[in-house]
Image (tube, rainbow, N blue to C red; front, side, top):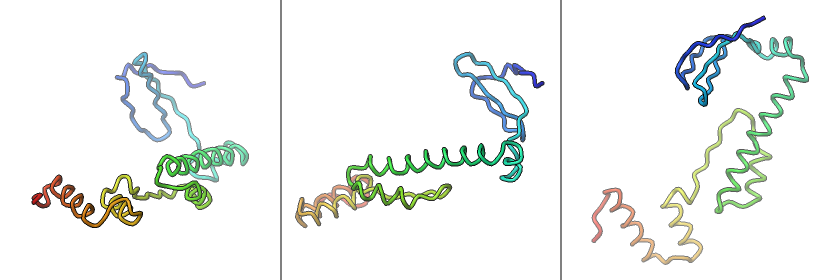
Length: 141
């Protein structure tokens, strides 16, 4: 039987030792550590917990990560629902995909406004000069 040990450590202080799990309560400032192994690789995890448990944990985490990726697309009003579906279909667990949003890239936003007819070339030039002046690239003249 493993006994919980109150280490008296400060809240948030987590040491990483192989096979040792540290848990800290920020509400009570208490911390415990205990030894626990989940296996060192897929084969040992399956040996300890069985195929169904290992697969179910993987599947649950993969679905959550996929939902998060698609939600990020849906949260961007510049992106279409079809783009969100495509991101979900193409999702690969463990692969980080970063996209530059036009809303976060002022030059891309201006180019999009020009292409859509929201602004004309003169306005584009004025806004580009203003953006460059903000970052100290050129003076506004």
